[in-house]
Length: 120
Image (cartoon, rainbow, N blue to C red):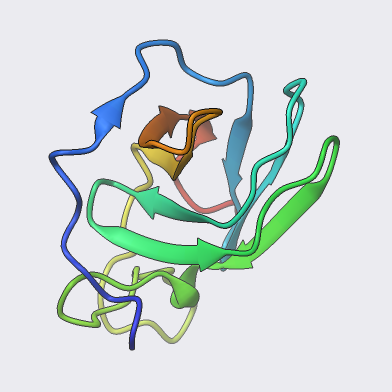
């Protein structure tokens, strides 16, 4: 996967968490942009390990992404679980958005993870 890369530890982290709540479903995550701004091309990070590039998020846009789309630097995918899964599912503990700020600098915004385990 061309977007499989190591987590960027040197990116500036914005201390305030965005007012965006991430919900873990069985095979997907979803969130709605409830902030007062839209975001251009960005990378969504899960657990400081798995990433997925997105084209952007508009105001009030609801986004749903299959967990299998998230890859780590070795192209391993986020384990979503399910009935036929051979390994236990990963727990979602952190979600972040790597994007450009108003000055064009790359920054990392935190999201609020509401449900980190799969729904039943």
